[in-house]
Length: 110
View 1 (cartoon, one colour):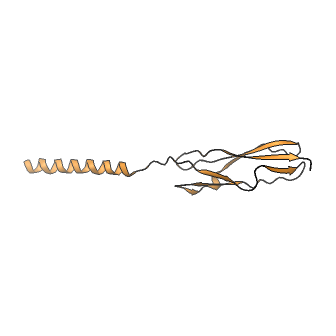
View 2 (cartoon, one colour):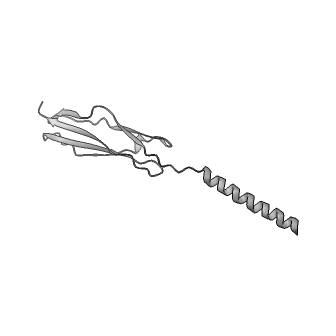
View 3 (cartoon, one colour):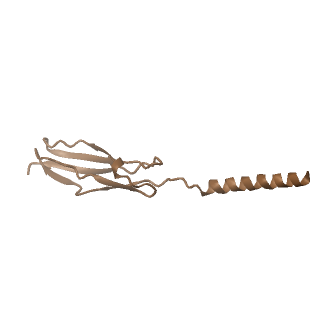
C-alpha cells in the first residue's frame, strides 16, 4: 500500500512539474510587425496623371513576410490639387497590430 501511494505521489508530482515546464516554454508573441514603404515618401504627381502606388512590405519576427496581408486605405484624387494619404496596416497571426505607416501623395500642376 505504501509503495502504491509513494509511486502515485511521484507520478502526480512528476506530471505537475512537466505541465509547469511546458507552460513555461510557450512564449506568447507580443512583437508587432514592421511595415516599410516602397518608393518615395512623400511623392509628387501631376494633376490628371496616372498614379500607381508602389505599396509597402511587412515582416514579422514569427510569421516572416506578411506583405500580402497589408490593408491599404487611400484617398488620392489625381484630378484635384492637394495633399493626400495612403495608409498601410497589417496584423500578424497572433493579432499584433503594426504601427500604421502613411505615404503623402502631393497632387500638383507640374
